[in-house]
Length: 145
Image (cartoon, rainbow, N blue to C red; front, side, top):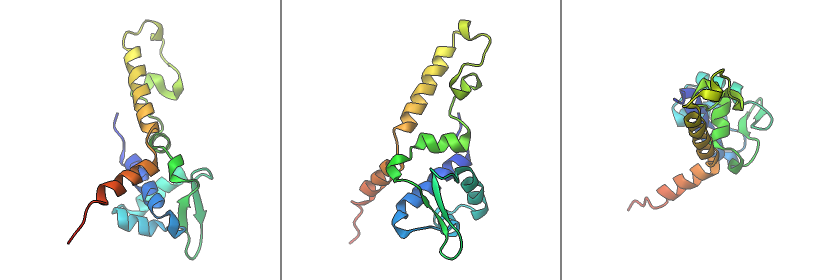
């Protein structure tokens, strides 16, 4: 399984919004500059994430985007499922159902089911807030004299 740039950049974009949540609505131009990602590419990502339970939008002067809920309620798994279309390691497990005529006799199916479970549990255990907290802890000891 390989996470695309859309998935990786969506995570970076949402982390940026979480980090700047106190600033109100944040423009894609500002996110693009901070994250060194093309604004055009961010527009494609926003189109995928732009739903009421995920992002708030404000048009016009001082418009932009902000998270619709606290950073602690966004999991990496949720973000990647939206941008990647799913996280299953093999196609026969897509949409939480086994789609294979040989499923009853497949010796490898339990391996893929176990891998899928581990991937999903791990990514669902990490929130945007967890990542921000880890970053802050990492750099809070970085003193310059």
